[in-house]
Image (cartoon, rainbow, N blue to C red; front, top):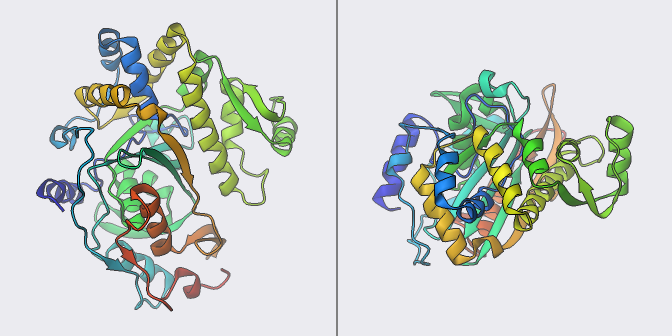
Amino acid sequence: MKNEKKEKKQRANKKPNPVAAFFWTNKRRRAKNIYFILTAFMLIIALGLGYVNSLLNGITYDDGKKTSTVSVPKDDVVEDEEYKIMTAINNAGSLNEYLYEWANNGGELRSSKNVINVLLVGLDSDTALENGGRSDSLILVSLNKKTKKINMTSFFRDTWTYMNIDGTGRYGKLNSSYMYGSDEALLDTIEKDFKIDIDYYVAVDFSSFTDIINALGGLTIEVQQYEAEYINRTTKHTIDYGPAVKLTGEQALVFARIRHSDSDSDVSRTRRQRQVIMALINSAKGASLTQLSNALDTLFKYVKTDLTKMQILSYAAQALANGWINYEIVQTPISDNDVFRTGWVGDQSVVLMDLPLAAQRVQEAIYGEGESNIVLEEGRVTAFSLVSGF
């Protein structure tokens, strides 16, 4: 890994977290699964640098972290450097020991100069911005300039994992790492679980969700009959179902958050979250200048990020010049039975994952087939074999 990367990780170990991917964080968090920052970049250029500059002045910048050391890469596709191979853990005697060993096995995080990884995070209450809270949704958006694809990966908030909170290890659900250690702990945990390098974070305030969608004139989304019936029965909202249903911001928020309408719970919920993000992209493409202006005006009031203003503008220019908005958008499910299972750890209902296998699949989805640095041996120990009920 290049020296620049090593220095970045050394800084991250002092105050956990890499320059995390397009993540969402606003002052002390309260967001919901929100928006595709590459789309915002496209909108930035469309509105003109002068107007955008005044909007960007409203963002709260995370000064003093790694932002000043991160250079904006050129759009040229370059040859990736070699990476070290790692194997799964086979000497653990308990689930927690297994999770600890996997998180701390010293394996190299997979990265590429051709990939931009951005973590989108939403929080579980509208007061979490000031008071902290659990992350409600976790979506990694990965733009690969070599494959010309944008990959979206949802991480399950109830995943049982090891986390490092200011130098102290503890075990719990993935979403609690944000509450205990803020964005730094959350990003550090995801990186070590899935062995991927995250570049930036962006946080968007929960209260902006409905306002931005309404500013764009609403969203058109495919709604299943059972989803509409559940919303109509359990909330104050009434929506239709069909392949192209127009939703207001308030209705889209409810659609993205419903969880108990499906037997698979979080699997379908994360699918609906990705639907909303993709609908936002399509809505932005067809929006008028006035709608874009209103949406950006709303968005930037609630954004905190470790991207600098110049980085945002530079990426925006690249996005427009190189057609990033037209890249194929693909989704990586990590919910197959060989990777994902639900059960109980103590008195907590959790998601348990075969993290080495999940990490291998996520790496190949992001970087390309055969581009994982994880080798899985036949007959290896898995997390499922270390705890009953899975």
